[in-house]
Each structure stands twice: as structure tokens, then as C-alpha cells.
Length: 172
Image (cartoon, rainbow, N blue to C red; front, side, top):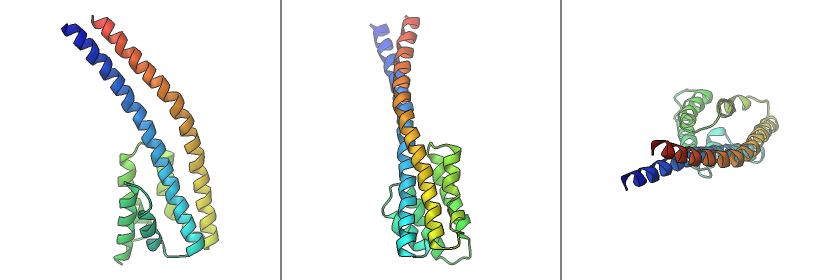
């Protein structure tokens, strides 16, 4: 009887571990979509509104989800403090803390951290066009991640279940 419970717990643990790995893929996809949303909203504000970046980030922070909403709000607030710190440094510091916690690739993190550089474009049209390029890049990653998610999730769940069953057989 004890062995039966052990086998059930082992299989359940293996399936649970597989589920956690699949969940990480889902979080990655969600974060990429959120990053795309941020860039799209900023692009729209720059193109049509022409507001200063601190007001744009304050507006966008109310429309995106955590953890980005909190970071955007902090960036906007720190820019308003007038302590002379550059936007690039504020952005990098706040985004690095957010990006450290989410499961995205190094290239995707660099894209997010490179956002202040595109604001050095000559005019609003140039900034909006560069944001459009960022959005296109994120769209490619989103499509790729969606494809990978379907394939990998099936494989991970199958292997996790099979590993749990194999381990339980070996331990019996």
C-alpha cells in the first residue's frame, strides 16, 4: 500500500514539474505580448500626442499589467523629480529589476533596455518609425514563441509523465 502511494506521488510530482516548465513558456509569451503593448502605446502617444516621455510613460503605466506598469510609473516619477538623472539611466535601472524576474531571452531583454536610444531620433516621426521596428521584432518573437509553446508543451508533458512512470517502475 505504501509503495502504491509512493508511485502515485512520484508520478504526480513528475507531472507537476512538467506543468511548471510549461507555465514558464506561457509566462514568456505573456511578457512578450506585454512588451509589445508598451511599445505600441508609446508609439501611438509619440506619433499622435507629442507629449514628453514622462507623461507618456505615466499614461502607458495605467494601461499595462504588472510588473511593467509599476516600473513605468517609477520611471515617470523619477523623471519628474528633477534631480538631473538621465532618462536612459533611470530606464535601465528600473527595467533591469523587472527583466531579471521574467523568463525572456537575452536579446529580448536587450531590446527592452535599448528603448531610450531610439528616443534620440531627430523627430517624432523618426521615433514612431523606430518603435514600429521594435514592434515588428516583437511580433516575430511572439509568433515564434507561440509555435514553440505548442510543440514543447506536448513534449514536456509527455516526457514528464513517462519519466514519472519509468522512475516508479524502477523503484518498485
